[in-house]
Length: 318
Image 1: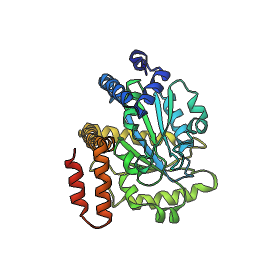
Image 2: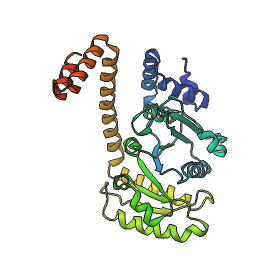
Image 3: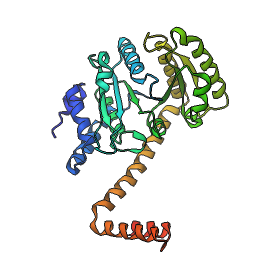
Image 4: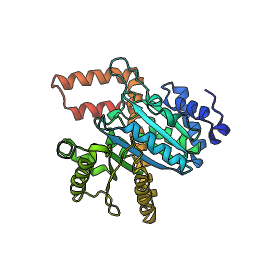
């Protein structure tokens, strides 16, 4: 698959789309091509703000991302949206409908929307999202938005690859607070209570106070206290305040050196994640290792050996 690096670095969307498709390929030769390409564009990466956006189904993620993206484009930014679609566990296919859900944004010259199938990756986060981010940065996109499917462990996955993690909530104070996992609040750098319009406004203000109180005892970054902002994606209300909050976070983070240090830690964790993935792939590709894996699995199931001894024998076989 031939990728024109010159046009990619010039921001050509077709070249960018082809490059991301190359990184998503499961063919061995495509994997090698993709890694060679990523190594070449690496000096042109890292100049963006990476923002993860999550929220329960029905919170209005796509509507919010479209309103947010359009606001940023009006400010002179180039915006890339990496929206992860859940793959069907039965057929392996996915809907990939994000461009229809963000119709106005997708028509903007300075926007790039890439719906990617999760491919069964943990928590619904596409395995190649990190590589897609690098390619988008090389193509000149200075704001990268990563939308999660809002289920399972995807929030933890995305929080580990972005600079700022935004959680969208509904104006539903009591029930919503009870239903949300404490862990998500611990991950949040900011909370936006969406749909704060019309008759929902008073309830949204109540919800805002509830989350402010809840976040009072949680603080995962010593330099930053997560903020709770009201917004209405439908009416384009208070979208600018959310961007200002993110910019304030970035400024403070860079001031104390946390921004670059956090990215370095993320890259190190990514490397070890890939080490485990490559070991797993090698086990599956080796006929003798596959036989041993099945044998050890059966012995563990039958209680003939311990999981540790079985795992040790499998790793030794490599």
